[in-house]
Length: 312
Image (cartoon, rainbow, N blue to C red):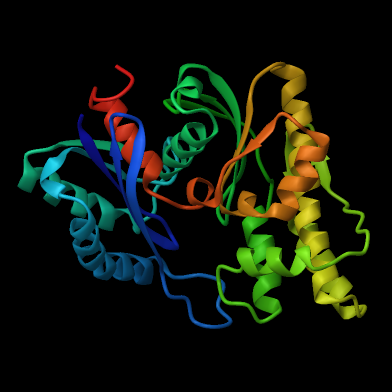
């Protein structure tokens, strides 16, 4: 049995994970970057600083739980997506840590992307090794993506549809911050939405496999100004996202019938979204929050596969 280490330094979380080639996640660590109250994110220079500051301590914590001398390969997300021009400075912190670890331990180093890590974690949680051998429709929704993807073994990822303006996670976070929640606000928005028992009818803007979400922010603001309860508005926001997922996915299934549908990304951790989508798309698979939100688990899994240690 061999072990791999995954490192992911996304825009809002520092993540580490260890995967063993028997097909188990041994341990995982995640730390959200600090965002000041009322702010909607971080400058890249600040994100890079916080990742660089967090990694040594987190690696020490990981080493207290697992013997890092057993690591045979280390994987790292070096950019947001597997696409030309995709780049964010925050990933440099992870790449530097991975290079230092690999050289110091004599371990193989595998470079991948944040989105491929999301895909691999979701595929693993939804179907283990089986889904790595076929095409899957993957919905990746987070603060920086509202992407409907045709995913082939998490190696080749083709964009089928996306938002033309605001991302779903941005709409959710902006509502949450407006209501006084800390950033990122998805968990609090979902918690409040679940407390709303009245019926809410969402209105989504979808054309084929693409959507527009800029109107959602304005609609939520208008509802609050009209005196609607925050719980009602949170539920409305999340159900608009859910309805968008349903309509875009149905359009994709019309062109790619019979493919599995897997939902990943931090926004997809919401029970409100999951229940709405699965009533209308029973085949849609939602994975636990540990695998859906930002994490290094998928990066560690890809390191094992690409280093020839798993799924040879």
